Length: 97
Image (tube, rainbow, N blue to C red; front, top):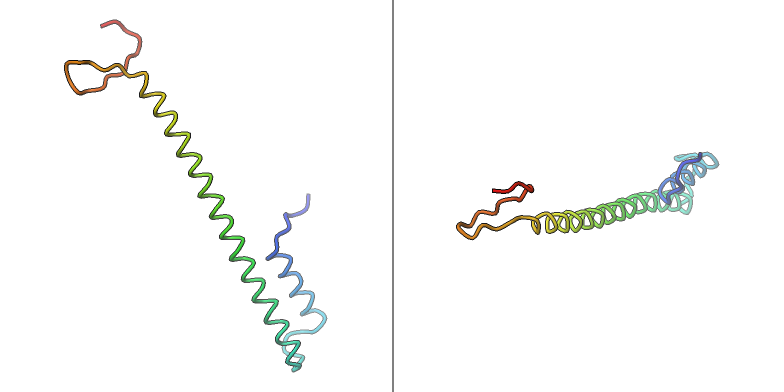
């Protein structure tokens, strides 16, 4: 099974391929140097964007988890029996008092 393709890894591969064709430091052409710098910048930006998306997805999953926990807690609290004599909530385990 192949690895999952991401923009940052593909840009890193493109930088390596570019360096194999024209090694860094061998060309003094401004356009080549600028292209290499731009590719490296795009690689960093892609990594940042991927991290941001991953954080957003984790935040959404956590929100859904909180909603589920809140629903389960509400359902569990509905089974409690209130004793009218005091303010303590006592669970009803099915035993007769």
